[in-house]
Image (cartoon, rainbow, N blue to C red; front, top):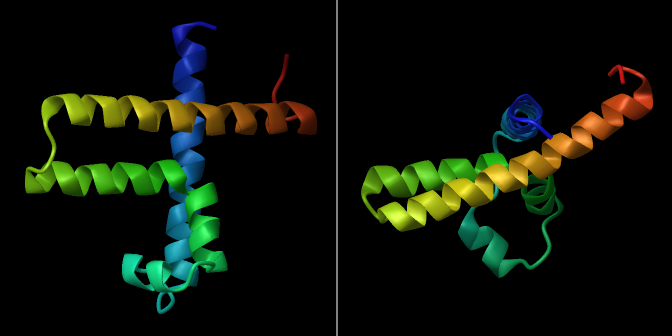
Amino acid sequence: MNFATLFVLLAAGFGISFIVLDVSRLAARRRWPSAHAVMIDNFRPFAVFLALFAGPALFVQALWRLHASGGLSFADAALAVAIACGWACCYGLVVAQCARLLGVAGD
C-alpha cells in the first residue's frame, strides 16, 4: 500500500460517511436522534443506522464541536484524528472492495 492508495481509501471512507449523514439529515428532518432520546430508549433503528453507516462523519463533527469549544487538549485531538482516519480507512477499504466486486474498479 502506498500513500495514493491510503489517500483514496480515506477519501472514499469519509466521502461515503458524509454522504450517508447528509442524506439521513434530509430524509429525517423531524426525527433526528438526540443523545437524551437514545439514552431513554435503548434501541432506535435510525440512531443505530447512523452510528453504523455514518460513524466517521459523526465522530468528526463531534470532534470539531469539542475543538471549537476548547474542550480538547492537543494529545486528545491527535488521537481522535487518528481514530477517525483509521475508521474512515476501513470504510474506504469496504467501498473499494465492493467497487472491485461490481467490476467498477480496474485491477
